Length: 402
Image (cartoon, rainbow, N blue to C red; front, side):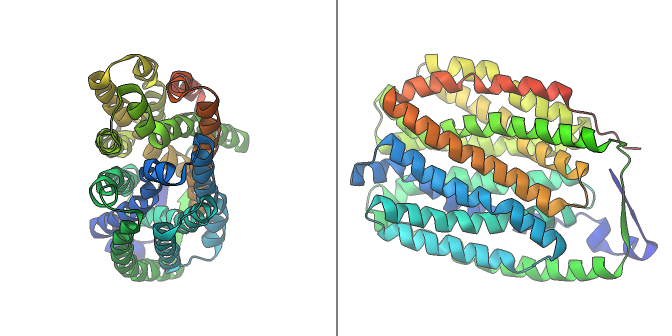
C-alpha cells in the first residue's frame, strides 16, 4: 500500500514525518481509557462477594459492557469517515467518567449493568477516531504507530488489577472514585490531540491525497481476507475473554489464593500482554503482517493446551508466553485490514475493535454459564483448543508493495 501526495503536502511535516508526540499522547490517552475499562473485570471478585453474584451474572456484566463497547464502533467509524469529529473523543471520556462514578455507588446487579454500559459507550466513541489519528501521525510506519497506540491500552489494562488491589480491595467499592482522576487527565490530553487532529484535517482538505492500491486484490479476495481476519479475531478474543475475565477466579479456585494474590498474578499476565503488543506492529512492517498474524494466533496453541495441567509457577510462565505471543496479533490484524480498505479507516477500525469487543462479550457470557454448570477449571481446559483455529491464517493473501 502506497500513498501518492502532491509536492505541497510532501513539504509538510505533519504528513510526511512520524509525529511521535501525537503517537505517544494518543497512546497515553489509550492507557487511561483502557485502565478505566479494565477496572470492570478487576472488581469482579469484590462485586461477586459483596452482592452474591453468580458466574452467569459476571458473564452478563461483561456482555453488557462489551456489547455497548462493540455495537456502536462500526457506526461511529462509518460516520466519522464521512464527517470527521476531532472533539468526539472528549464526549467518549465523559461517558467513561460517568460510568466510574456510577459503579462506585452501584449496590445491585442492574445498577452495575448500567454503569458498565456507560463505560462501554465511552470506549466505542474513543477507539475508531483514535485509530485514525495514529494512522495520520504514522508517517507511513503504520505497524509501528498502531503498536505504540495499542501498547498504551494494554499497559492500562495491566495496571487496573494492581491499582484495584492496592486502592479498592483493602478499603471499599467507593474508592473507585479515585479513578475519576485518570478520566480527568485523559480529558486534558484528548483535548490537546483534538486541536492537532482538526488542523491535520484542514490540511488534508486543501491538499490532494490520492491512495493508490498496488495489492491488485479483487473485491472477492478482499472480502475473503476480511472474513479470515474476523475468524481469527473470534479465536483470539474468545480465548482472551477466558483469560482476562476469569483468570483471577481460576487461580483462586485451583491454587487457593486470596483476591489480592490473584490480582498480582493477573497483573503479570496483563503486563506480558502489553509487552507483546510492542513486537507485533514493527515486526509486521518488516516481515509482513500475514506471518505475524499466523505466528501470534496459531503459535500460542501449544502453550494454551499445556496451561490447565501445570502448577502455579508454570502457570505464570505459560501465561507470560501466551500473553506475549497472542497480543502481537492485533496491531498487525488492524493495519492489514486498513491496507485492504485504505479509504475507510474509521469504519474498518470500528468494525475490528467492535467485533473484538463483541467476541469478548459473547465469550464472557457463554463461559460464565459454562463455569456455573461445570467448573472454572473445566472452562480453561475447553478454551485451550481455541488458538488452533489460527491455522486458517494460512489462506490470507500476501499484501506486497510495488
